[in-house]
Amino acid sequence: MKKEKLFANSSYKKLFISSTAASFGDLFDMFAVMTLFTYVWHANSLWITLIPVAYALPSILLSQAAGNLADRYDKVQLMFLSELVRLLFTCLLFFTDEPLLALGVLTLRSMSSVMKVPAQLAYVREVVKEDQLLQASTLQNIMFQIAKVVGPFLGAAALTITTPKACILVNAAACMISISVLFSLKKAGKNIQGQAARSSHQTKETYSNGWKIVFQHSILLRVVILFHLSYFVVMLVDAQISIFLRDVLPHHPEMLGWLLSGIGLGALATGVYLNRKKQVHHPFRLLSLGLLLFGGALFFISCFNPAVMSRYFILIAAPIGGAGVGLNLLLFNYIVQTYSDKKHLGKVYGFINTLTSAVLLTAPLLGGIVVKLAGAQTTFLTAAIIIVSVGFVSMLMPLRDKRERNVQIDA
Image (cartoon, rainbow, N blue to C red; front, top):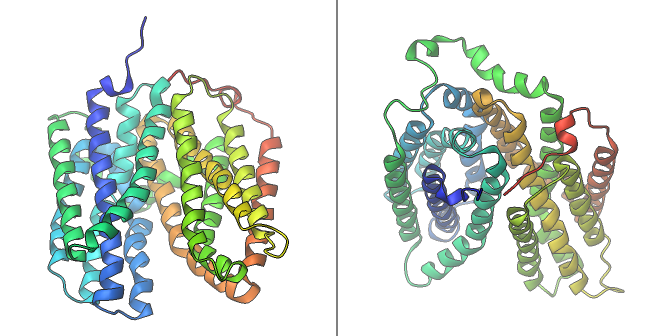
């Protein structure tokens, strides 16, 4: 019997369109915000430093509560309301003309966006068959990687003929597309998992459920630790890679773009490969392999010596490192969705989003301090050794769960 294709699933197809539109709009918007602060308002370094805080702090504080709500109420309704409020604050940002007010609007908009992530990821688990979860995860991440490349490129092209505020309007238009698609997805009474009376649960229970579930599940705990360790190093490297290249190749500024493109290409190729696979054995082992690939590439780059090596050797290592990052990201999401209970997936992702946002906020700051004290090359080399060591140990660790040893996906 021929299997139903993923995009024959109307609910997933609409969610995919909504998510893709939002991703492109967000990247346009982020590019516009940085341009406004830097070149239009001529904001000082303090204001610019506070931009990632405005994006990440609400997620750190509210993600676990958002995950709890995503498990108890209509997920489509929550996503719809989140996008509606986000549209409101995006329009408000368009009329803002000074950094302090813009930071306030960005913070409020980020608060409204916190709800969408756990609701969206939990909804995927509800509407997609288990043997299509990997394909669903990889498709969304492929589109995100494409958006990361195309979004800033289109934003830069748009700035040659218009203003940064016009890019904010592009995000508003993307919000409206996402809202219209989610509106068509709404169905009265569907996916409601609780009543309003249940909202009287204690705050302590709301915030503790997500981490309790993860800490009580050995596989989830292990994969969460491994992923966030690699994500921390990725964010540290991403923030400081320009400093490293300036130190080793001071006369070749073009290498930064080539290096980042190579990493993105490796991650994209991994997503395409996994999306086409009919079977994936040992997802946890592959996640550990991702650590080894990323750590090995980082080790090679950190040992680069321009006196005896061509600068193009760095470009060979970049796609390998990107492939490692891609394996970590894609298989992390797949393992979390596979091993989490559907009823509590929102709580799990709420806890994960709290950790991810904390890493996003702290890794660049800590990286800047360490690089200033020890130098970029030493910092990268130390991080690479840690990642490779952890990847090697996790590859050798025994797997107690029988499902973990051999999870097959028929995409």
